[in-house]
Image (cartoon, rainbow, N blue to C red; front, side, top):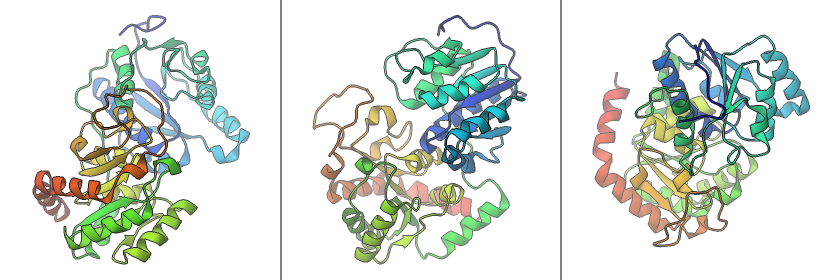
Length: 360
C-alpha cells in the first residue's frame, strides 16, 4: 500500500495510538497492537484513550502505557493530554480516529511520522493533523480499515488476535463466583446502547428471556451501563420476566468476564457485541440502524446476525449511512430462530469449552 507522502524506513521503538472513545473501536485496535508486537517485540505502545475503554485496556500485556483523555473535563482535557504527551516522544503515531478532537490530540503528539486516513475518510479536517496518510480505499469493515495501517507499514497480519477476558487470578475467581450463583448456563443480554436508535424494545427482550429460560434452559443476565435508558429497560424487562438477573453497572472488566463465561450472548450493535466476538462467545447480533457490512460481527458468529438494515434481497452498499426505524422490524420470532440456529451449530461445543475452562 502506498502512502501519501511515501513513508520513510522506520525503526519502531515507540508507537503512539490515537483512538480515544468507543469500546467497539478499542476492541478493533487490539489486533493492530498484536501485529505490531509480533513484528517488533520490543516496541513500546502508548495508547491515548478515554477512561471508559481504558478500564478494559489497563493491564493488557501488550499495552505499555495509557494516556487518559477525560472528555468530562471539557477543554481542560486537551490541556491535560498535551501536558502528558509533552515528554512522550514517538517514532510513529497512528491516528485511527477521524474526528476533530482526535486531530487536535494527534497534533499534540511529538513524532516525525503521524499516519492517518486519506482525505476522503478523515472527517472534520482530521487529515490536516497528520504528516502521512494511507492510500484511498473503497469502504471496508472497521477492522479491515485499521489493518490498512499495518499494510502501509508492511507489518504482516493474519487472523486477528485479541487478549481479553479475565487475565489474573482475582478476576478469574470473580468470574467463577458470579457463574456459581446460577444453576444453568448464562445468556447475557445487552439491554441498550449509546444511541436509542440502535436499541431493541425492552418488552421484546423480556419475551426473549422467557424463551431462554423455558426452552433453552439458560439464565438471562442483563448487562450494560447505568444510563437512564438502560435502567428504564431493566425495569421493564425484570417486571415482565422476573427470572432475568441484572448485572448492569458491572464495569467493562467484569462485563468481559461475564461474556467470556456465557453460553450465548445477545446484543445490538454496540461495544459488548464486538467484545463477545473477540472472546469467541457466540453472539446473536441485532443490527438495523448501522451498516452491518461495516460494523457487524467481524469474523465470528456472522451466521447469528439479524440484519434489519437492508430490505429483503437488497444488496446495499458498504457505507456510513444510518437507517432509522429499522430495529423495530426485528421480531421475537427472529431472535427465537437465531437461538435455534445457535443450538444446532454452537451449543454443544460452547458448553464443552466452558466446562473445560471454568473447572481449571
